[in-house]
Amino acid sequence: MDFKQWFCLKGRDSFTIDAQVNPDDARFYFGRPEKLKELETQLRKGFIDPGVPKMFIYGSYGSGKTQTLYHLAYYLQHPPPRSLKLRPAIVHVVLEMQSKSNHLDWHLQIMEALGKETVSRWVDGLFGTVSSMDEALAGLLSDYNIINAVKNLRGGGEMPMLAWRWLAGHRLPATDLQRLQLTRNAGDVGAADMVKILVGFGHLAETNGEKLMFFMDEVEQFQNISNPDCFEAVHNYLRQLAEPKNSSAGFIMSPYAITVDDMPQMMMRGDIRNRIGAINYIEIPPLPSVEDIRAFLSELLANFIDRRAAEDRIQQEGLPVTLDTYPFDAEAFERLCDYASQDPVKALPRNIIKAVNESAISAWDVDKAVIDVDTVNEVASLVFG
Amino acid sequence: MTTETALPSYLEIVSDKPVERFLRMFILSAKYVEELIIISPIIGMLRGGVSVSMTRVIDRIDRERIKTYVITNEPSPEHPSHAQAMSALKQSNYTEIRYNDSLHAKVYICRTRGGGFALLGSGNLTETSIQRRIEIGMVIFRRGDGVLLFQELSRWGLERLRSVRGSILVKPMTVRR
View 1 (cartoon, each protein chain N blue to C red):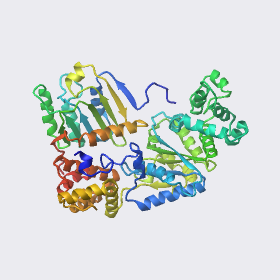
View 2: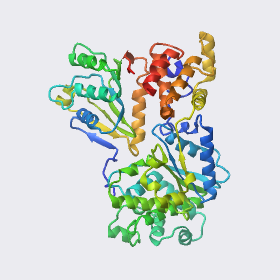
View 3: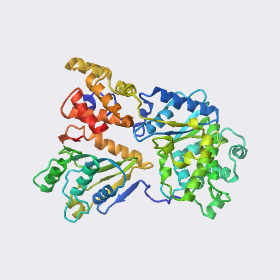
View 4: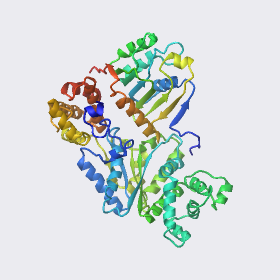
């Protein structure tokens, strides 16, 4: 019998939730119904005004920000809310910023996450529905150079890749610009130019029945940028994305921040706050009470344990445990909830899941079929102490 | 603007003493280290010219209370330094030690708050490997698209390898309050 069979785990190796590694885990969001309702409400409102959500969700390490992003993506797809009239096209981006990173680096990371194939598919989709591609693109894209670059995504040979490189912000030599019939490199006139590309892609997506949204994680990385000119260029890029007139390329960005005041400076500037709106700065706090922790743990176990297998095991071996708390006995379950709630700052989903996993491994080490209070006492002090 | 290179920025191939490179990164890391995972069939005291000794590693583990998970082969008489290293690591309250005699993999993972790095390669955590062997490894930084690779590797070491039947717990972590 292996570990997952020992604890009657249902189709998983452990109690860890990681939607980045296991996409099916995106459906889980345990123990915070009010917070989830707040997030979903703001998301739905965003599709009405300004037409696409623009939100920041912040919290400490381990508070569940990444899981929140993936769960919201899941929510938008299963099924889409009524206010979202189109199919969601969600692009996950994990940010990486260094001291001299600028708006071009950010743009490139977004473009690499979006992918040439996706945009080419949208261009092909548009081609199939219009009589004049030039007219159609002119109606969607605001700039001669962007129009020509997008047109070339449909070309043969190396032209589509060249066009994509231009759209992604790579500097092309004059000969390549000429081949693409472009007058300059993207970004030559500033960050606003790059955002026009994203907004244009948003419009392209809409013609294909999709709504483009970028879900960006670990955006506290903006604080790594120490060069002032680079910082301002990135800020300008963000401001352009946040503009009300951008109703086609939405975003949810997730930084580490214990309070809203800890958020990356550029997100707290007045021009950004005014455009986004205070109501779209949403905290993902630690679990506030022992009842919330109990609910979190109960829901986790209910979803991760194969109840039939667990019931059989309990009966066959006469285990001193009920299905409600299996594989913890009742006392161990309550003790874990108590430990988790002792320090409000540490009542984080990551810590709770770690405590569950470590308790299970400890019990497994000594062939205990049930996690008892002795095991929880040993483990929880390491995790929450 | 990021320069185009063959490898993405979250990966680095190290062919010059990769294990020592990892140790130096760990010792010199200014960030708060949450966890250290050492997976190496043989572990030595790292004396004799290695720039980071096992003593230094254990000092940092104890000073900063770094939860450290060690999975290794059971020491054999062929490698007396291995037994010495295990004896030293057992002195720390912050180490968990498991023996798995089927272990051949070499993985070293350092998780920091909001980041981290890992080394996946051919080298044992021994003086011989560092000083006298040709080794190669890949460093994975927990940033950008490297986050996914790092998470997978961490889960393999911290969960799957520790819960395999052959990974016998020899010394649990015991933190004194």
